Image (cartoon, rainbow, N blue to C red; front, side):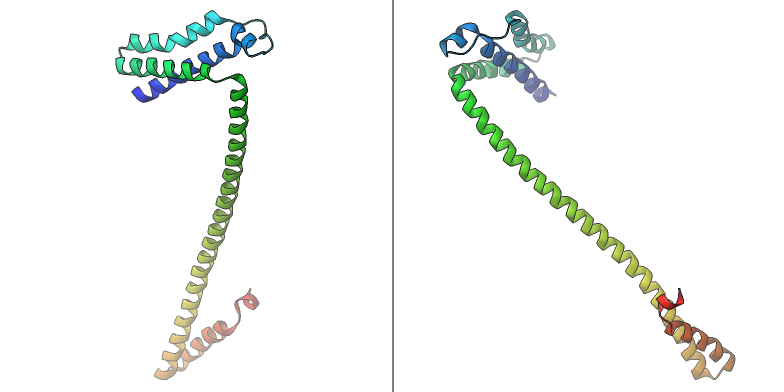
Length: 176
């Protein structure tokens, strides 16, 4: 639980740092960016930035608080140290990597579906083979009975056995 809580707190605060960084008027002027859209709310973003730390402290999870505090310090420093042009390049590179990964996942998913269909068809063939083996075993049993009756000399059993023998010799498709 501590790991999940810590990661969630770090991600929420990192999002607030990213918002503050992207909408800071002084930073935007320094990098010749257009003015941010009206409605910028630095106080709300600052509250969202520090709220996870307050919650972690209130819960008494001091190890998670320490990790959160250190992570936000390093993440904030790292975000601000990178220029908007570098962020754009990194974002484009991540999009290309993401598209390539999505294509690989899509191909893997298609292969998995093909393998699933093949296994399903194979299992149906095995089921059909089991039925066919059972039918052939019945025919062999009938033939063995006819042979046993023929060697014992029982004519009634021989006639009955020949009926089974003749039925066994008729192809399955013709019998249906």
